[in-house]
Amino acid sequence: MGGQVPIAEVESSGKTARLRLRQGRRLLVSGEDQLHTYQDTLEIYVTGDLTEADGYLETAAVGAGDVWVITNIILENADRNITSSRWCRFSGAVAYCFGCVTRAVPLAERTCWYGWEWAKATDTIRGEFVGGQIGDTCHMWVTGYKMTLEV
Image 1 (tube, rainbow, N blue to C red):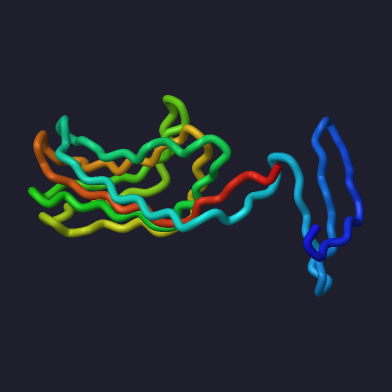
Image 2 (cartoon, one colour):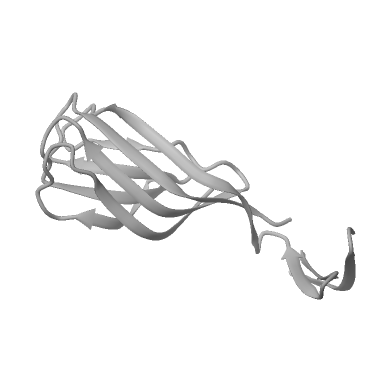
């Protein structure tokens, strides 16, 4: 176990949790579908032309077994002023909007959301450009952390 000493293994409701003591006396706790492990930085850039008025850009879906911890999203409409911008997480057909700018946004000004939003497998992140028009070139940057479920 690479310098780890097992302390206990507990099973409850068909799930197993393990406690191990690592050299240097660091306690490691792992189990099925309960903890997350850092995998990589999350750095997504999406660009495209809006296909409808008040359009949006959207990330690909979070992969199976992954979790995204989103800490920053930036939106920019490179072609025109917009009336507001909004950030949402889509889980199935349900939108969970977690931020918005409710003022006029000048041409090419970037709007930023900073926080802590978790997205699970199949979720997508959408940046909405209220006041945008068909054909506007827009940009979205999403940053944070990619995590994996402990099994």
